[in-house]
Length: 312
Image (cartoon, rainbow, N blue to C red; front, side, top):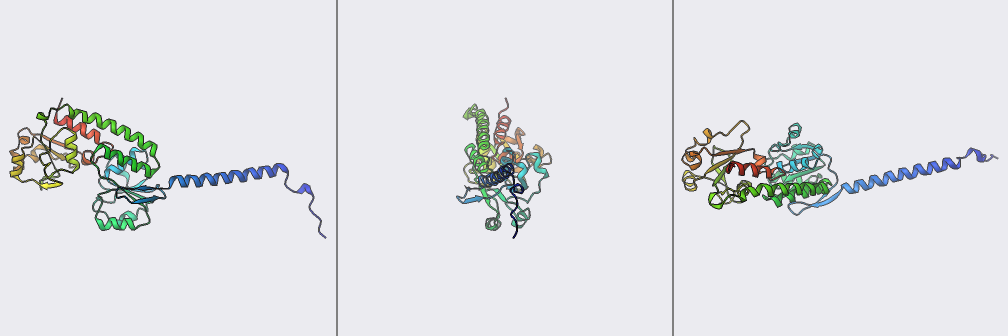
């Protein structure tokens, strides 16, 4: 018959207490880990009204300069693993892989980046690529297009919710709102009779001008200008006859990245050579995403354009 082990060979009361304490500590760590996971997950309603469940946001693809700038402004740029070709601010974006122009995307190219989340401007395309992206297991959140300060605030709120940075989003939104009001106040000082007619062109090969409903039209208005193309919607070709009729005081264009376009290039175009803008060599060139992105820096663009239109 085997003898029972003496009591002295069993764990001491102190050892049992230490063991129980370690077990409680391990359980607490597990609970905290579970709570953290739950806090990082959630559901948001995107620009199309879709309910999107967010399971993770450590490997993000951003599509749209405004979206990318908001993520960086919230201090979360390190989470971005790839972005679109138009996302060029801040400078840290230069080190990120780009997946092409946001309206000519390859779903396969985006999937190769192994993201756990895609945050994109609502106008990404083409439609078939968007359909493929929506069918993936990776959540895709579409951010609204809205060419107004209120629209920027809505973009910030949505992106901040997706990233679990709601409080930081409120701080950023308040900052952007204050800056926008200050910039728009410059335009308010310009008498209606003194406001200049401003036409925005995408390029010089084909003179396609921005009409109502475009971000360029909105930026012109906030800066105190008048868009003589405001009677048409979207981008429309502007004929020589139409330009003579509109008589723009200023031509507004996006930078080509190579120091142009220059007044010499712009006003050599016959359709523009007889305009009041040509007589005064009145050309304003701004970076595209900066000017028409309607993101955190748009207030600065409004101020810069207002000061260019109305020096002093």
